[in-house]
Image (cartoon, rainbow, N blue to C red; front, side, top):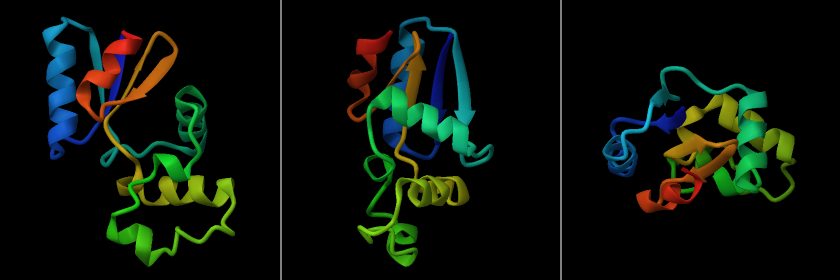
Length: 114
């Protein structure tokens, strides 16, 4: 089973999903804007990706600026909570397979974990 944290309005997310479908993967689609991830799920993603919360954030989103998330005094916990509270901040798409994760930017990045 392959999971994709997906936003159907995002072209990279759609391209990544199409790539998985071409490979006949059994896919679980997680529309994270409709069904936001909780703190534990985000922490698990960070561990599997080997990233910090800030590295997993869409820093060009208006909400990032409005919430002053560029502030270097914010803790990892505070940044994770910002993603929980504002799911739009989460970078996408993210594919989970074989107990690993990869960001589909570009979409071909996910092939390494299949």
